[in-house]
Length: 111
Length: 113
Image (cartoon, rainbow over the protein chains, first blue to last red):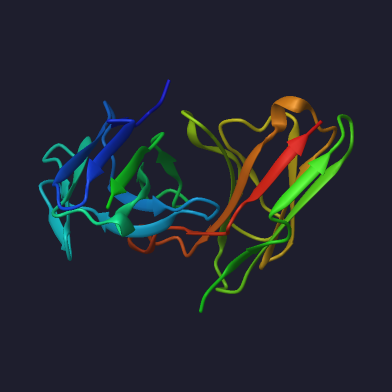
């Protein structure tokens, strides 16, 4: 059983479309991170959110941390082929900086 | 550019062999981690270390051991490789501050035949 559930598992869209991926848990986290992983590489950190209700923007990417700190969403506006990859959320606390990862959303943006 | 370097990108080993996966970081981070990544299962924590010579079991430590003799190096050891250990292995390090997250290596894809 995954501590963090991500949905959808797979998403294939056309360039220019908008999309939202979700990360849900029954556990409360002190902070939540989003990573993107490209084929053959390790995950790369996109953002960390630490406050319930927090919204962070990174160019066309908008990240939100739920008020109860149990869930998060990632919204991409006008997706581009360069956004293709595996998006992973990770929730954790301050104890040794240990994070639990979701199984990921595999995004394919077609030109 | 800060880095986590894993010694091999691809490895093929035989069942029963002892396998060493090496990881080196140049960021002077206290914390280092070993994960395995399998389709549909995400990243699962095998072991982590928060200081030299210190180690803690993660969620799936069976069949693995680790060594951290120097701050910058964290090794994962498969004592007797089995086919169900075929996987992508990812090493990561962190400063201990959540806001900075993990820095991952590029991974080692291990196939046990």
